[in-house]
Length: 416
Image (cartoon, rainbow, N blue to C red; front, side):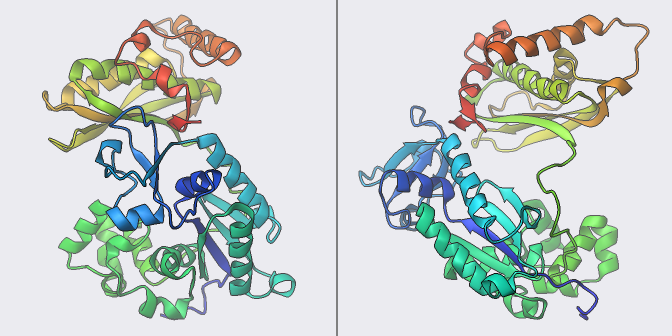
């Protein structure tokens, strides 16, 4: 591969090790790397998810971030703490401010609460080369917050991210340039590469593609024919090529849809789930109304409990864009009755409204007076904005199957 025509940047990908667990460990004056600690969404519920585990807990017991509370070993040395999302967001903001001392805001792309890309082009005269700046940032974060981070360095975001995932998590700081791709990345199985999920892994494996190197050597036209634009991206990523922007306003982005979901703490039956779906539709439509948007495509996702596995994800488009809760709910229930298997217990539900339009663009339906239904939604929103999220609720939200009251006490689905 001739890389001479591709841009070369100095990009860092910085990942906070076991971020939630590390923040909690520091608060308790524990060693984030050596002590056993688990962050649980809601310790009062045995089915609650383990959101984070300290590196020592992961190593000793193989605890992952998708374990349930009741699956934790009965070890008195394990510190069990509830999630405090407000604290994690606050620390994340402060870490970004620290990074901003090295690079301008337009060079910082916050990928998630615990991961960030930083472009260092032109900063060598001030702080040294990319590896030296990475070392300084890593030390500053440790001294200021007590948190260990892993840092990948690459010519673009993809290389920085992947070398961080595959190498830096073991050694602290790792670097991969175009010329290093064959040696450092190609031997790994495709499922270890960022952006390749389990379904894509199975598709690639069926084509005889097991490693990233095999993907790089595969025929590009065949990949494009099989996977479309995604196939082309897979091919170029296998060669370490990524043309995504490294400067810009990465905070502002156009809303492409409104999604709300929940991992249920007990098995829901087909009778229970209707209430849960209504609560999710209410929140999705509230967000759409707040943004002045309506949508034509409604998506319902259902995952069954571990005993049966499986589930479904289906969407349906309607003729007139809407942000009316009951419109979205009725479509979701149509999808549910069509695709639910009739007997499996349910553990995860999500609702999405997309294919968005500005509210002013919505067509008038001359055969139905929709204004009253729409007005009710805006009135309920106004009451909640003024008096709180639970100031006015549908009666069904007060039943055991309702999820709104519990969710209102949380940030991102977890306790603040």
